[in-house]
Length: 70
Image (cartoon, rainbow, N blue to C red; front, top):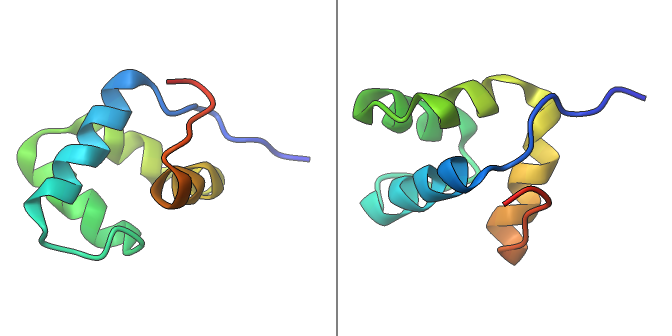
């Protein structure tokens, strides 16, 4: 079974929350989240979401606020 290459670090968690605080997109729109993060220079989040294997953990964080690595 393939697993995600990354976990949500404190830096990535902070960047997710910053994107959320912009209120520009639905947080389940991965491409829009990556666009905003890239525009703002939050490259750790862009790198994290560029690997689809990380999407389930990201979804879990968005829904529950829980992370495995942060």
